[in-house]
Length: 111
Image (cartoon, rainbow, N blue to C red; front, side, top):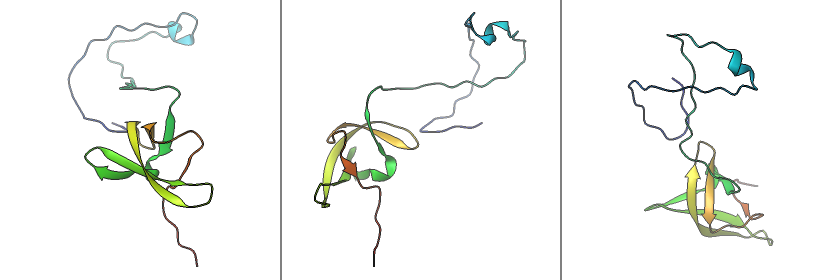
């Protein structure tokens, strides 16, 4: 079993009604009893959202998050953000950032 993202493993038997698109090749495939397959279940989705890499998020506790925003003068400031959906790589930012804001994804040391 391969999984990604936040998940809970469940077992059981379900009955599915399969439909195929007559314009696609899948309409010509015969499904036989006992065959196995792969299913992708989409738990949630969002369109036209602002995303940041998970490495940019700082967990403040109690469901609150922040990011470090790099200003036009190069100064870094902490900004509280509201997080929506998350996956293995990115988090949706519902408020607290604007498109074009530059966020820090970590720290670096220079000599």
